[in-house]
Length: 326
Image (cartoon, rainbow, N blue to C red; front, side, top):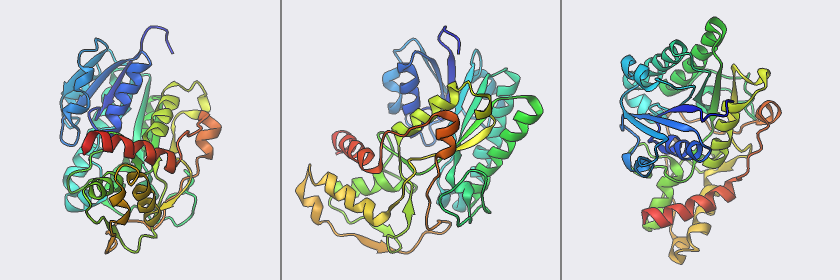
């Protein structure tokens, strides 16, 4: 990479992962352009960055091609995080999920090609594995998608692959597995499970676990994801580009174990939390029972070594929520 500070566009840069990426790359002397329409991101996530001369915030929507072009002015690299997440949201409203996640993605990919972007790194999803029952999940073995959201994320991978083969673009997809950590929104109908459980426990409310609690996930702390994005953006290994990688820790935790961890760590701040009861509800439509990533490909081709296990990450996350959201 050039010695002069490179410019990176982070779409969805005011969201949970995007705002952490903005901070991370500013700390590493990049110039950062943040594009967000604030539909799921928050201005307060990036407001403290506005005085930084190397940071630019553009309010706009990736569904508008002219906005994509404007945001790419002078940009060398793209970290595309903008999407409408959540399987249940996509089941409720598949049209909007498709508009943002497919049309918006294609807008940004094509505008990046036209702008001569050096590399396009994008948020893919573990939901792409669909009904494949094999564990751990290996990048080249996927099943049929189980939700409109999963379809949109698979289509992203197909478009990126075609653009790299047809136009010579460098693309890398990062299949995120249940990312959690600071700045993750605990509120709203589609809140992720960890911040939602943390908020309920802090308020002495019983968290509702879908099913018997034995479904398991490869929960992945945000700092591991930041590391993967940097490796994907900077790798000089020609074999490492134009492909997809699992972005995870490589271990699985059941929902029951997750609750146990959260109660243990939160009760260090408030002992009453240890005795909060848990309620079990029905399984959620479109959910797969188990998810576990193989991270061998990322280790081999990118030199990825995740630093935070589920336990270490949860301790950090709980501390952040306790300090910021009580």
